[in-house]
Image 1 (cartoon, one colour):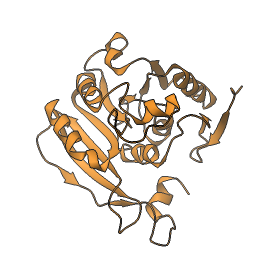
Image 2 (cartoon, rainbow, N blue to C red):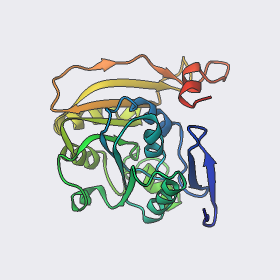
Image 3 (cartoon, one colour):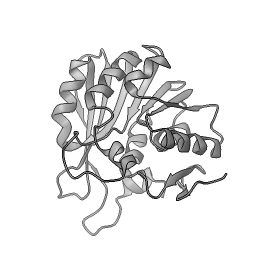
Length: 244
């Protein structure tokens, strides 16, 4: 596999998976790994869409962690989409994982409404024109809502999902109210929430959310997911998620 300038191949240390990343671009973090574990209850033979797939990390992991039939990764940045395609080839998953290089608002030029059994997404966390922006465009697009908003993702997800289809998201904990309001607006009923803490006595930084299209109201709050013990060592659950 030929690599472009500043690219490297990372061993994901799970089922032999490898991922091509650009060291100057946006590299995956713990949030993507946690989302892939949170969504591993995806039903057998599901058709899945990963919105904002980036380098394809979530899709690659789900190909091994679940018995999905097909996953489509939607990515607006052409260079990142091409990199994800090469990672799919590197892992010989072309029969299961396809990349669609488009704006999520244009997705119906490629896929039909009510098409997917499940959607996963690790979207940009920060609203446009908020926080300190990274000067590198690829990273800025991945982190800030400059190309799509939270509402764009939830609105299009609702249209893409079948009745009772599942929606999984990882996001910043402080955006919880925005997420819940937007899910209800587009008839995706929040069903499960899990807060992610760096250490036991710290406030949560991330939140994992599951919603179901047209479901009845009932929300389950899972026990917190803690990444590190107070002494800095990884918790047993994180070691399990990473396969260590």
